[in-house]
Amino acid sequence: MVNASQVLLPALTEPELSQKAKDFLTRRGVEVLNDTRVLGMTKHRLTLLDGQQLLTDKVYWATGLQVEPISNRWGIAINDHGQLTVDKHFRVLTEEGVPLSNVFAAGNIAALTQNNQEGLPQLALAAEYAGNIIINRLIYQLGLAKDHGQSAKEQKNPGYFVSLGKNYGLSNAYGRNGSAGLVARWAKHAINLSFFAGIGSAYGFFRYFRYGRPKR
Image (cartoon, rainbow, N blue to C red; front, side, top):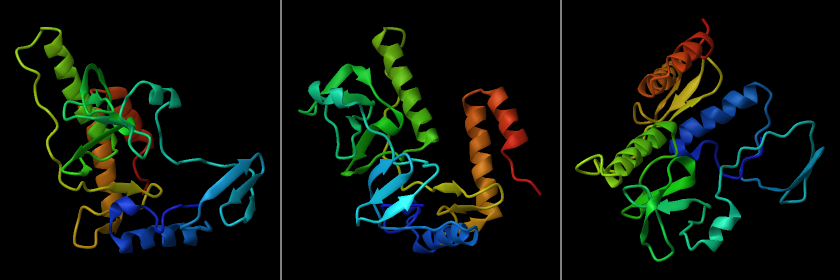
């Protein structure tokens, strides 16, 4: 595993949890290279920034998202991470900071900042929260509602839950140093199930309950 950050899972904020994640993977034969960047990739080889060559059979690429480069020509404000900047109604902002009345963005591609801090975490539940705000805004603009509903409120630092296999998880939501093991894993499962329930997906709920829950 080639990781550009100095620690694994920096969003967990607790150094102990990052180390536990690395230890978990190391015990299972995974070599973790922290603070290491990939310079190039071919079919059977990775080239690292320090010149090291890694022979590969398969590469699983997980480096995030960014908008299509053509968006740079539209006068839209794009942050340093390649995301569209939005206001508290999730309207896309121009380079001058003016919201576009009929253009919205939510999810990983949208960046909402409040008081110079990230306003929402890049999580599925946050995307659902943003989607509800956008829907209410559109209904209002179509003249089908008297007001535009709620806008995004300032969020506290979120608690993150990370799955490492079916029976082990990590979270910074419980205790001073977070938690690791089955408690964090079951909490993650409860959140996943509540998400499917929230979007009204009975198929997703029962399929996840059948295949995604931990095994004894």
